[in-house]
Amino acid sequence: MTPTPLIFAATCDLAGKVRGKAFPSDQLEKRLKRGVGWTPTNVMINCFDGIGDGPFGALGDLLLIPDADAEARVRFGDEPAEHFLLGDIVTLDGAPWDFCTRSLLKSALDRLHAVAGVRLIAAFEHEFQLKGDPAVANQAYGHEGFELHRALCETLMGALGEAGLIPDSIMKEYGPNQYEVVIGPEAGLRAADAAVILRELTRSTARALGETATFTPIRDVASVGNGVHVHMSFLDDAGEPVGYDADGPGGMSDLTSAFAAGVLKYLDTIVALTAPSVISYERLTPHRWSAAYNNLGLRDREASLRVCPVTAKDPASIARQFNIEYRAADAAACPHLALAAIVHAGVQGIEDGLTAPAPTEEDLSLLSPEALAARGFIRLPTTLQAALDRFEASPVATGWFPDGFAAVYRAHKQAEIAHLDGMDTAARCAAYEAAY
Ligand code: GLU
Ligand code: MG
Image (cartoon, rainbow, N blue to C red; front, top):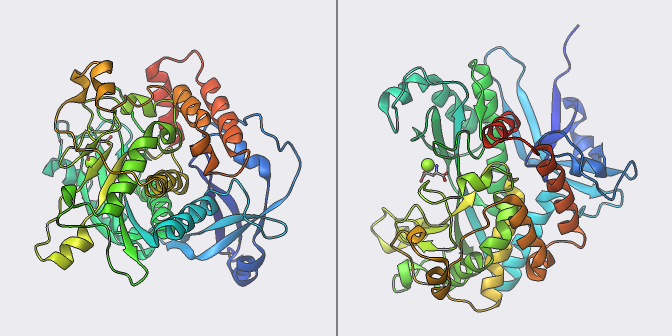
């Protein structure tokens, strides 16, 4: 018997989970056109395998069409090669399905282009932890902590390269057994695809080496969280960078300033999509270098949105390197959906002609709610429930998505919240650690 090589056609769904179906690899040509069958109710499956109360029931059929531009094929040791293609969910007539996260991102990117004539370039930076206790403690940014898992880091970087991503750097992060892996910038859709591929290959790499990796937003509230930071810049149709202006505040061009202003204005309404787990709100608290307020920072890792430093010296290279970083995201979010929400918020800022506020350089947690409000800052929602309420209460934000999207998203998340009923924080963290 010869095993049949299989290709897994995949979608990253509302739960941020990668699900799909496999087919024999010699069918690829046919499947790139016709896809594999898919079921609407799958979108209600939450990260705990519960099913929210959705409008779909047992009815309906969809197609998941793999995209040859979103392929990952990597062999770990003697195992069969891991091989998957991300794809789009369409109706039987071939129209994008309203809950296909990849299609939602495409329409956000199209809106950015229609409104501002620019394309997004993005890079996702991920933190993850290996489960279990580290063999050596006290290894924040440590050399020994890095060497302890050099094989894993080297295997992971090799796997990312083999999958066509751009390995940038990898480090031992602050937390116990916490690592951070960075890949290079890519065009909008590809950047989100790359984030999904990176998460899956990190888990596979760990498994191949007898470890288990988790991207859960926070494992232990006594320690730090695992963030996802999204770096963004813009190119015009000629491929020239248009995000930087040497004379602009913090180096931001008018375009970047308006985009940043939109993201900050709508931040409290989009965190439900970018930090979408119950425990995400344990991470989005002051003094964790995550994000707790809708503030802009220049060199400030407590800011939700940060203008990143550039190392280049000549003006052309500075303009290419210049980027802003969204820090209020985590890996419970589907990268496509999170990026769609960020882009829509930014485009809203451009459409509305907003200007970015002055960057903060202080500890906002020391200010009273009144002092914060007087300066236009708000504390981000402190629970998933409150974040969902903010999203649903904003006709502008819900209007960026197809009719009915917000209600389906709410129902999906409500079942996830209900699953955790009666659990204490440690038990909730443990549940998410097992899910992401
Ligand atoms: N662990 C932090 C977070 O949850 C980020 C630390 C850093 O600046 O890299 O976002
Ligand atoms: Mg980090």
